[in-house]
Image 1 (cartoon, rainbow, N blue to C red):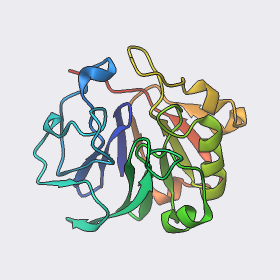
Image 2: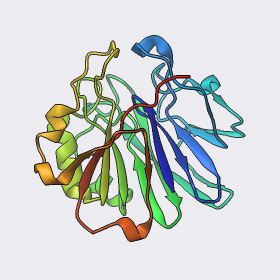
Image 3: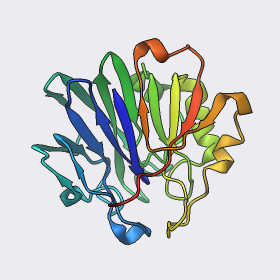
Image 4: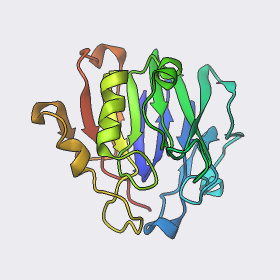
Length: 217
């Protein structure tokens, strides 16, 4: 399966069959344009402008934005309710965590998760091979809280998201604060926006992979 980073918290996930899903498309209010993209479905973790720009995705026959179970041409999609803040949603509301089963891999997109790590939440998230996790703080969990989630979930691959990069107008931290919590040999910065994964690629050790945002056309 292929993972393409489109910026902010937005990814395009594509199974080897060609079935694709775009997660959390954003609009230009964050400071840069989202690239044009097509997909079979869109998932939306919550209805904020930097996560629900559905019209930016063409060809999608389904928009999934609630706690549910879906099957999309062989791709299993499940959802778990969580909170956008540490006060059970009183500040910023609820957040939906999505899990995808593609080519025998379990991919988890945490959306704008803001609540502290708990055994109850970890239990419903597991198992996870690839974890897409917010690390920028302020509106979501910060670097140290994200590290706790990684340590508890123990995924094979961690891809950080929702951090400040060039052009971003949001008051969030850069990815560096998260990366420095890991040993250097366990961090890889890819010179590109795409990553192809197979189960045979997984070593059993957690590796953090930083993808470059795909530029708008």
